[in-house]
Length: 329
Image (cartoon, rainbow, N blue to C red; front, side, top):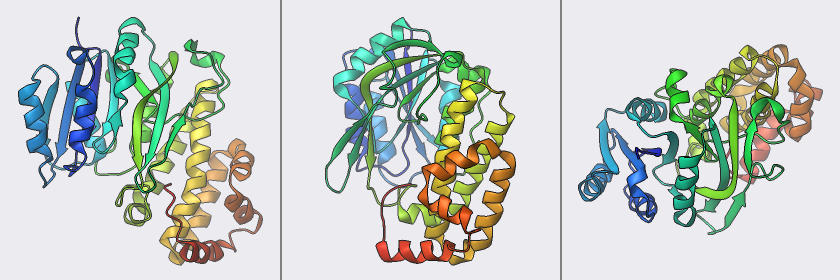
């Protein structure tokens, strides 16, 4: 049997976490079904050295890849080009897979043939040690579905999603390079070409939050604000380009989430973004008028901003500075 799952690990300067990440993959009995690319994206620490140790010990499973820095999207593009596994899953270098369910997951992937596979996600908070399991499809029974027969209630994330590798290759997937927030492109760009998905109510991905410098942290938001707005606009344009149907509605749920998040990004960046706020949201209203009411319902901030014609935006900036909210976007 060939490789069942290609795992692409974005491993940029994660020497303090990468051992834990790789150990979670070594714990499974079916390592021969795994193809793991540990992509050192031009890092400066010992991540590549650690990756090579695993490559030497498990040459049939692990492959250390060193490349010039190109950002998160470049890692995905590189891994998709090399991938030979039946399915493809992205893994951040500071996150890990659930060792208790990985073997069963690999067995499942060997048997099914759906375009997308959705699983539960465990969020682990670095600061307080809390652990929360999220099942994005708890309203559906475990099994196979066609996209167009389902009315989706929640959006999907990179952490909950595994994609058929051939789907990515057929879509000629090209993720934006030198940019943060491109995990959304991996999940949603192939969506127009997908027909079926499988729901599996078990956790596979452990998502670490609360790490300083993450794209969703306050520091990350301030540093990569322009990239956030650019990727949200890309998502909006993809939504506009899609034909009506359940897949477009699924993407619409994510657009609503990201457009709502953008409000906080603007307020974290500061007062100088006031004019950008109005331009961004007025453009959104023109392109996606059918999503405006749902977006207002999902966000108290946007509800207030839209109803006051953005005049209260400076108050949100002041509020965020006082509150110093570190909740990730």
